[in-house]
Length: 304
Image 1 (tube, rainbow, N blue to C red):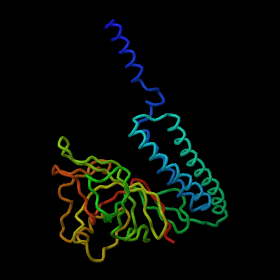
Image 2 (cartoon, one colour):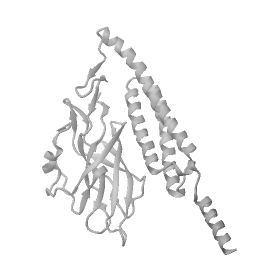
Image 3 (cartoon, rainbow, N blue to C red):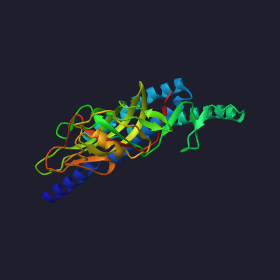
Image 4 (cartoon, rainbow, N blue to C red):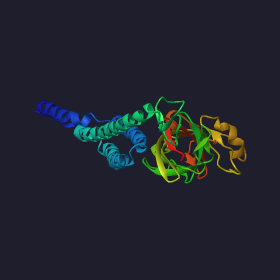
């Protein structure tokens, strides 16, 4: 009887613990890919905006709702540890639909623009970093460009939560082809992507922050920005020199950092912008800390 009960228990555990395929399949990596696709969709919509503002605004509203749904799926998966493949697939397909419609609308407008070029009526300027024409008055800040921004609020691994939003303001004008693309004082929107507070067993507190938007003269532009260095914010003073796109921003640190302290003490920056404390306590980035941000994808900005 005991042996039969043991076999029955084993079968029950096997069946009970084996979740359906649709519940097992979705992982946090899948959710991250959804978020990556929303970034790509933002880029497609930005390209379309200079050609068809009304259509771009319609697609942006749809994408904003989808971004909220992605966050919901991420939290639900983390909380329940399971997520229906059909639920995930629905959001994925709708994001792809937004991208497809944005690309299709841009292509339709490009056809019209190309006719103007063949007639000798050039309506845009061609950027030397891309074979695609840029809209009139636009510049493209290339991938890999770095800029420095000062935190407007502090970040601490002991209190920060995943998906927390924060802001930082740029310290110096960023110029491209002689035109100011990102003026000093522009607002970068950041988000806490992951956080690991210090514990008795894990004394290395970590936090990953990324930037997904820059606001310039009231206009929002989607970006993908990764932190590459954290610098002391105390003593920031004076008028800052202008830095060209792709320039060595480190060349202006003498003007930015009053004490010349360089990298923030007790902090290491790893791959993907993960910031780790080195002193066995919470990672603390006080208000005023300067974060060096690298753009991981090009961004088109209207300068006039």
